Image (cartoon, rainbow, N blue to C red; front, side, top):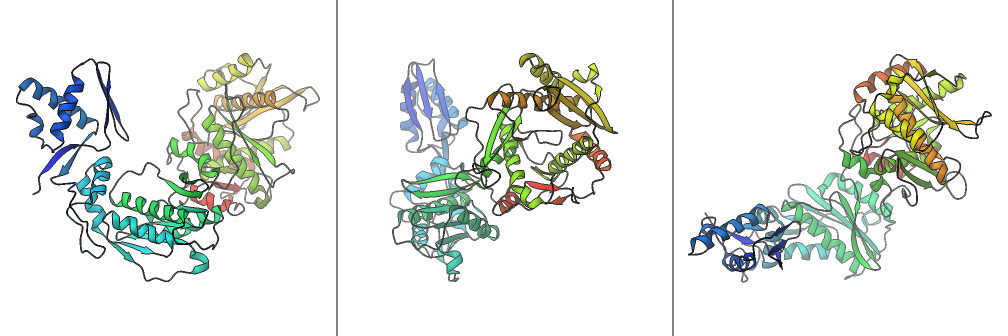
Length: 561
């Protein structure tokens, strides 16, 4: 059994501060103070660790017991903050020559540069090195990107094989696939000016993902010359990504695709889901807040996004979050403006993105009422609310009963009604109408110019309870008032409701009635006579492929409503 020892990670840097010491590595830092002798202890400890120390040796770093105890406690703090790493004996031997490309197994010790890399970032450098050499890597494709990938893999000590598989030149021009023995793969492609590297994933899914990325970047069949810098960088980055996966290292840029540009030469990470996900039905909590908040970034990314960017610019973000998106090719020559709102900026960005998807889908939806959601449950909830609201409006019902005082006992209803009437000073009114068992419509009206009496609808909501409906209607009214103060004429807008996911743990209270949502949808379906299964709308390409990737769903009623 080989002997292991503790060493300082190669990336650790130390700075002497007044009365203490500041240590930092690539992903952590540690500050120790109120001990003037710390710098001298640090210098002594680094000399002791330079030759490697076993766990027992860490208790015997000095013949003087007080100094030995102080050094041991300092070393223990370094281990606790991941600044020490355990490596095999003779880990970074400078005379080691790594295994040739046709070797039958991994070399016992990595090349010096690889040893330094793994000792800097790996939890267990020896296990990571074994992972790199365990299975051969097959390189499929040709050109400068393939050459750069092979050189990088070989320099890292991996076993490399060239595939004899022929590629389809029009379809696979400039595309190179690196596949490990366990099926994990990464795909790269490049022209003279732009290239990409996919996330690491199952090889069966990556070809379609690579095709989408190439299409988004406008990559054609332009040939690249040997030594072309974009292809070289793309190939080397692909090798680095696969090596990190084989070594079980955490990729700080996952899940993203890398885009390589030539002027100036750079590689940047851009959001890209690693695989196609099928939307699940009635699973409102299957995603976490981070994924919901990241959807606008993924869909509107300037390199790989299928939608125009969602902007905040000079829009006010208090007391309610506002975001906008200008959709080109729809409506007037300058495009059509859509907005989103919510109790915070993250929620507003998400709903502005959903509004843009709805606008682009309207041309293929074949219906006046459709809805986009982060999943089928969300989309169906929004669709049924809109159908019910249109049904009430077409029946000529414009008012309801006065809101009982108990409706304002809920924190969210009280918060947003007070924001509207007190903070913004709007002399608004709110009425609630029972539409069906477990379905309440709240409508907020205030001063405006759309009605003959000088009042206009500022917001509405349909929820299972009166206080939930008042809360969402008042939130929408606040957003309308804030938008009107910014520019006249509120545009097409999308906002949260009881079917919406929770995007962030905002300090602003919002109802979360997921347990009542299923019953509300049943009541609304009966009310509007909607079929049990709405129809999924396919937006124009390439938006349709992107929505399938991230799981967004666009629905319309199953008739010509």
